[in-house]
Length: 74
Image (tube, rainbow, N blue to C red; front, side, top):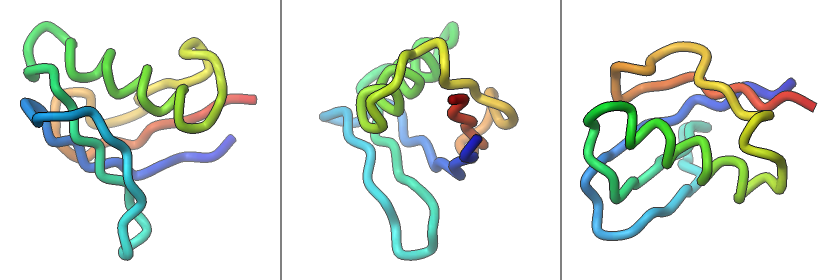
């Protein structure tokens, strides 16, 4: 079960997920950080990037912050 360290940037122009030199992932999200919209978009983006179901992706820590730990279950 890999755990990704993700830096989320809500209210971006486009939704992208890119690997950074420091070993983290940068998620630029179109959604605002309101009512869990950005977190839902992040889960969908990670699932698409890694070719898994959205139900296999979980935000383990940091749901209310910009720095998150995201787990992908097998």
